[in-house]
Image 1 (cartoon, rainbow, N blue to C red):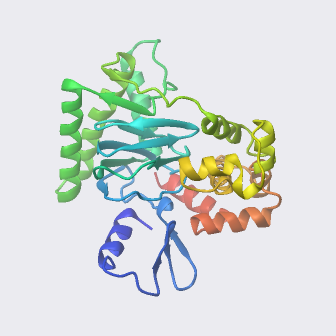
Image 2: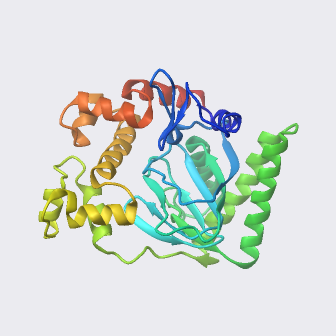
Length: 328
């Protein structure tokens, strides 16, 4: 489902979510049992989409990834952000850039003192990579490399912040009016943003926020990241980090995940494995091999988990992504 279609559907049913559709934490469930997952929303444009989002309450957002770049310009809100296995404390005017296939989610560790407002850009992966190739080819210097990655979080200041704010405002305006040539105009605006980010990365004109202090949670998340194909249970994690547990339901690890991530340990492990499975599918791995490498005991268990999380089968997902890539 396209983002615009989802927004339109939610606006039409904002007063009540009556059957045959039921709103859930992971998306919208149809009367036939099909899940239209929020995290599997597709872009409207083959190049970039822009919209604004506001959360007024402490929302629950699952660990997820996208098949495109996601850029968030945080205008307000008190929260942390988990990207991969690293947590960041987010401030007003911070910019978050999440590459395709990278797990991420906001962490609302306390009630919001103010609405969480952000301007959101979704950028097609192929378009982004083309911009990168052209940018570095234009530098005429061997010190630049197309592989150079932008940091996950940057904190622009002064004139640079004003430039970025004005470009985002223009992008939002063009996206709302859709006048003649709006698609091309928005691409031009984004190219300016793109150049600012990479210039800033090479000659810092802003702070690069440091990750939160590494604690037990961060160590466990990093361990999960590196051992997705292995046994990942509360018992094995507790033994690995020498954390005592009286019972599984009341273990230190379990409580830590509930408190810091507002979800269960096994849910995070499954979501992280499924995100990696999408990356492997997109890389051309056979589906049964994907299930094994991501730590699922057999293909049927992987299949059921994938459909439950994304509302689409692994095979259909592979076909859809291939068609999208071929279209571009």
